Amino acid sequence: MPERTPLQILIFTILFLLGVWIALSLVTATGNLSFLWVAVIALIIAVLVAAAFKIADQWEKAVVLRLGEFRGLSGPGPFFIIPLVERVAYWIDHRIITTTFKAEKTLTRDTVPVDVEAVLFWKVVNTEKADLEVEDYRSAISWASQTALREVIGKSFLADMLEGREKLDKELQVIIDLRTEQWGVKISSVEIRDILIPTELQDAMSMQAQAERERQARIILGDSEKQVAAKFEEAARSYVHNPTALHLRAMNMLFEGLKTRGAMMVVVPASILDSMSLGDTTGIVALARTMAEEKERKEETGGGGESPPSPPGQPGKKPGY
Image 1 (spheres, rainbow, N blue to C red):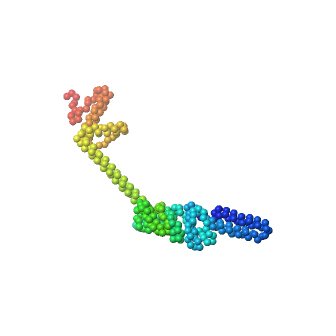
Image 2 (cartoon, one colour):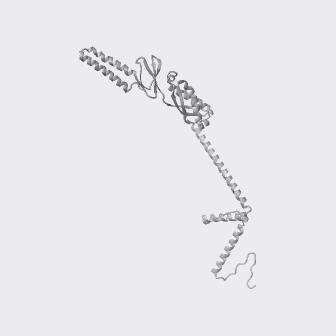
Image 3 (cartoon, rainbow, N blue to C red):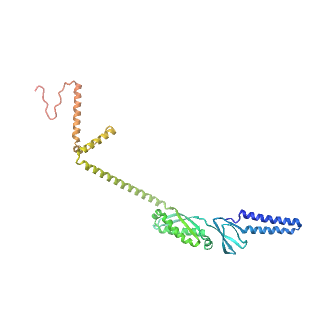
């Protein structure tokens, strides 16, 4: 808080002008210049009164010392001190204050160098202790926080620090609060902002995480294939004693393929055709198609000419015999 306030300047101006006016009035009335000392006396009084008047804000407490001894606390609001005898040594802020602190290149329990940044939230609860028990409580709190942070880092593994920040926050709060309690300071909370690790270690951890994700993907794919195989096995058991259902299913698959694509080539082993009795069916279809083509060719040639070919395996007969 600044030592001079507009109200102090106003008090000084009013008292000094009042003394000058009285001095000029006496000099004018009597013609004696010795009354000018009244103005000097008014100046001294104005300076002392303005210096004695103090104002503390709502969140502040003033530590007043009388000839070097602790007299008491004053504020918030206006108050007076005895000039030249008493003085305000400190203005203590009673609001919650934030302090940032960090630990650089600190080794964890598994010998990994890390840089850690944290924020401390604290409040002065005992103004007398904060003023009399420590020289500079702000600097003391900052150094105590840094040493506590290094101590906690040295006892923790890197994985625990990355996964369990809340646990580290509570542990830091307890350690720092024990150290600052004797200074009249209460630690509200500690929050770790960031944990920086070397670039090489970041790359290694990224590769490890990628490999772990690939392993999980392969496991999921294997489980899916296992479930599909189990369903196929269950379907096969339902078709074992019902060949008609199996034939209908095969025909339905061919129909669906032809309906969606218009034409489809299906390559299957001959054993499957034999088991499904599809080989005979395809032979009959082929024979019917050959006979139809032969009939169309006869109609085109007029029905005469060459004799129809003999069935395979039987020698042909000469005409006239």
